[in-house]
Image 1 (tube, rainbow, N blue to C red):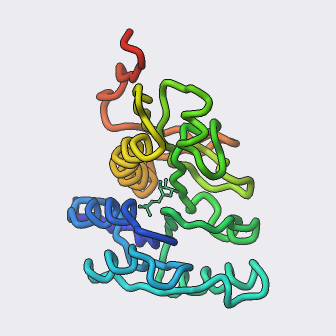
Image 2: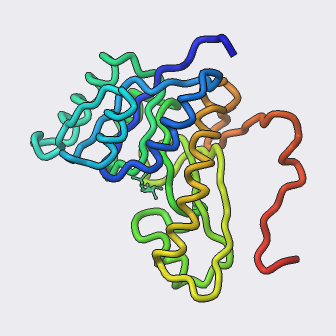
Length: 220
Ligand code: GRF
């Protein structure tokens, strides 16, 4: 593809393995987005090193430096706008964003959450999935709305919960599919293939390759 690549910024707080998946996707010149800025609210977050290694501009904007959330988020928006970001991806960004920030980036703000929403919003999703005894677990990429872990779902990926799983093994299995799902969903948004209607998002996937796909556990 020789078309324009949508400038994207990524917000992180930690190790940045999802950031890395997005960096790797953007390394393909035919991918419709490019990362122009990575912002961490945590100094020294591992993801900052990943960005620097890929030659991507980084900033650290610590929420602790601001008395109020709105001021912190105004600083985020100023940096994002200066970098020319048109889509903002939250990838392990451990701050709840407020309504003004969500409105500023309306329908251009994505999040990845490690559960099959609307199940298990919030923290400790893998432990809660194990405690609930669900047989399928996974992750969700959605457009951010002011409510926590809510908003139009662009994509989900499911994995089986296996006998003997603990929190770490289940988290690792989910993380593997997070790294596939996030670049896929960002591609759909950047290509204009996401259609929003009310609280829902519809996507046009290429061809009908996924039309018959399903994941079931136990085998059926
Ligand atoms: C991921 O599990 C993501 O779904 C959640 O936080 C974790 C971030 O991991 N929001 P990483 O920093 O991308 O490795």
